[in-house]
Amino acid sequence: MSYKIFAYWSAPKPEDVDAFEEYYASTHVPRAAAVPNLVSITTTRTADGFEGNEPEHYRVAEMEFESPEAMAESAGSEAWATMRACSGDIIERFGVTLTVEAGEREAGTPTAS
Image (cartoon, rainbow, N blue to C red):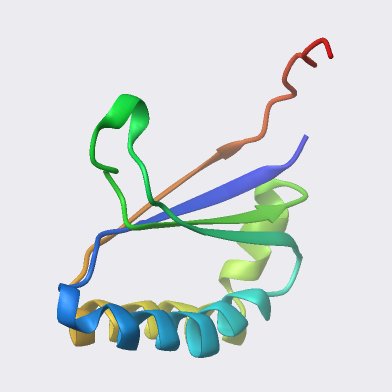
């Protein structure tokens, strides 16, 4: 079992997409990847909503830790503070919103091939 944080970003204005993507990829993701105890980080730029609907979020990031305790320990680090400050910069600079949720990863049932 592991513990994941999910960060849901709203879309920047169309004229800010290129600048947002550049800053997100070159600055924010490396800062998030530097957080101690991080097992993995996955970022996704959504393109399609379910069954033809518009996507609810523009970007989704998943940060995985071995346990809630490992994540809590990371939350006290300087790297975590730097990542949070960077998130605030993104919100202020691009006028986007950020929603963060967390939970334990549950094993799924394998599908037949």
